[in-house]
Image (tube, rainbow, N blue to C red):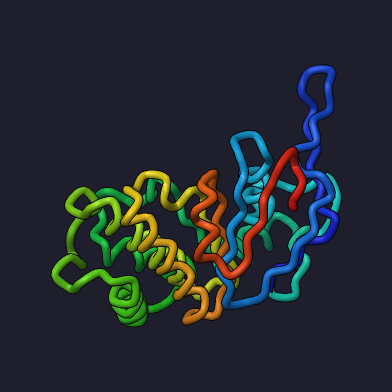
Length: 221
C-alpha cells in the first residue's frame, strides 16, 4: 500500500522559488499497476525521486506498507531502499559484466540471503517474466532491449519489495514490445502483491493500468 498526503517539493532557482510538486495526495493499494503521465517538466520525475527516498519533500508524508518514510533517518532510508523498493529504468541499468541470472541475484546479496536461495528466487523470477533458461547466463549485450527490461523487472522484484518505481520503462522499446512490458508489469503487480508505479510521457501506457494519474505543473489530476 502506498499513501501520499499533501506532498510538496520546492526548489530555489536563483531568486525564484519553484514548486515542483504541489500538494499531491494519492493512495494506491497493493497488487495494482498505476501510471503517472505528464510532459517533461510536469514534476513526475521529482515525484518518483520522493517516493523512492532519493530526495526529501519540503512538506507532506509518504506511507509505504504502513510506515512513514518521511520520518526515517539516513540509516533507515538505506534499509528502505534495499528491502522495500525496487527500481526499473528506461536504460535498464543492468550490470554489463554480470549474466541475467547474476543481475537478478545481486540485490539479494546486499540483504545477506544465502547463495542457493538467491539463485532459486532469481531463476523463478526470470521464468516469471518470460526469460527462457538458455538466456540465464547471457550478458546484457547479448539480450534484446525487451529482454533486458524483463531482466530489470525481475531484478526489481528480487527482494519482494512493497513498491516498484518505473521511470519511462518503455522509452527505449518499440511499440509492440512496450505493450508487452506494460501488460507484464500489470500482471506482476497482482502476482507478487506489490504496488508498481510507472511514470511516462506516453498516454497509451495508461490503457493497461489499474489506476492512472496525469501530472501537470506539479499537480495530479
